[in-house]
Image 1 (tube, rainbow, N blue to C red):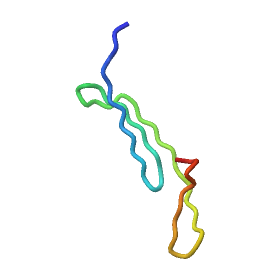
Image 2: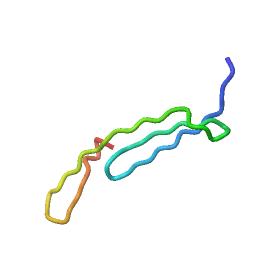
Image 3: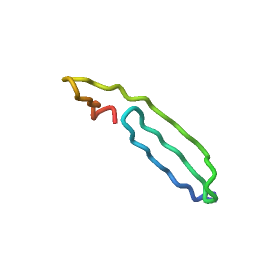
Image 4: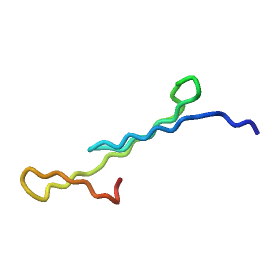
Length: 53
């Protein structure tokens, strides 16, 4: 079985986590995204549950 070289990129943002897979030429092979909930424990505070990350 031939193995293709791919690059996995992870983007951890404040509202979502994304994963992208690229081939050796930089073409996108796959993407996935999951939205994250935000918690507001006090005025002016925004938190995410670390288990969701």
